[in-house]
Length: 171
Image (tube, rainbow, N blue to C red):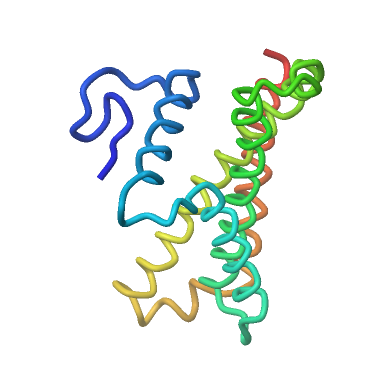
C-alpha cells in the first residue's frame, strides 16, 4: 500500500499536483519496478487499461445507464492520464523541445486538466447515485435510471464543469 504524503498512514502534508508529489510518485514507481515480484512494466498500465475498458464498453449492447457512465468516466480518466503525461512527466525528463514550449502548452492544458479531473470526479458521483438507486430502490430504478436521464445528467455535469473551470483559464 502506498499513500501520498499527508494521506492515509503517510506523514507530512498534502500538496496536490506539486513537483514534490510528482517526484514521490516517480520514486514509488521506481521502487515497485525494482521489486522481485514486478516485471518492471508499470508506467503505462493505467492508460492501457482505460483503452481496453473503452473498447469493451463501447461494444457492450444493449446500452445501460451504468455502461454509459462508465464510458464517460473512462474517457475523462484517459484524458487525465494523457494530460498529466504531457503536463507533468515530460518536464522531469528535461527534453529541450518540451521545455521551450511548456509555457505555451501550460496556458491551455492546465484549465483543460482541471476540467477533466472535475468532470471525472462528478461522473464518479453520478455512477454512485445510479448504482445506489438500482440497489437500494430497485422498484424505482426502471423509472429513475433511464438512458435519456443519464445522458442529460452527463451533459449537465460537463456543462457545469466547463462553467466552473472558465475562471481557471484566466488565472
